[in-house]
Amino acid sequence: MPELPEVETVRRGLAPALVGARILRVELRRPDLRFPFPPDFAENLQGRRIIGLNRRAKYLIAPLDDGAALIAHLGMSGAFRIETPDDACAEPPGAFALPRSKNPAHDHVILHVENARVIYNDPRRFGFMTLAREAELEAHPFFAELGVEPLSNVFDAGILAKLFAGRKTPLKSALLDQKLVAGLGNIYVCEALHRSGLSPTRPAGDLVKANGAPARAAEKLVRSIRNVLEEAVAAGGSSLRDHRQADGSLGYFQHQFHVYGRTGEACAKPSCRGTIVRQTQNGRSTFFCPTCQN
Image (tube, rainbow, N blue to C red):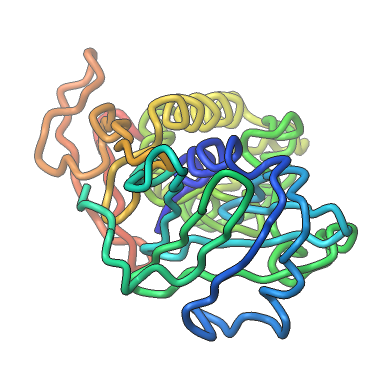
């Protein structure tokens, strides 16, 4: 599943082609993706101008000039590519190791906009698109229970302390809970915890003092989360599985992984002589150094 940095790089790659452009025509080559398209989906998009392109957690949101918003989720294998009159063979926006699908049989949605075609390709069809009123997005079922954005200005140690107070949940599980922190995924949580020197199995409530104030570990964790996400976005995400950027290029943050996928390798911290191990938490692989993470 694409994580926040991958979705953010897709957003940035799509923005030049979409923001400010009018949707001239919409091709739906099947009636559904993960879910059926809403009634009159194509008709309601046609003629509308896209006035922005935002991200909330792992969702892409494109506000339209009539007050509606196009919502898109990449699922596991969804990807966009942009084709222009000057480059009819252009590849995708966003970053992510296997080559993405170029099979036209998996081109399910085509947005014909001014000066470009934006094509959504999804072999597994776990992604989806729908429409909602922009003014009502906060109450929409997709967004109503989402937690704080980890790259937002409000995400700090104080917020983390309020979210984690009294929780015995393992720290990694708490960070992956989208109702607490929105958009964090397995890869970047493993990396942030390693940078922070925190064990993924440590109770989340340990990061909160008895008076409710954040412990120093919470402050360090917030910095680590911000830094690893910002570095991943700058690198174009991680080229894992089926995902690429909108211009077709791969993201290379995976070359900066300190723990993820490095079972049996030496810990990357110069002062540590530990070895990276893998264990399963809630059905997900957790990579960490038991020597320096506690």
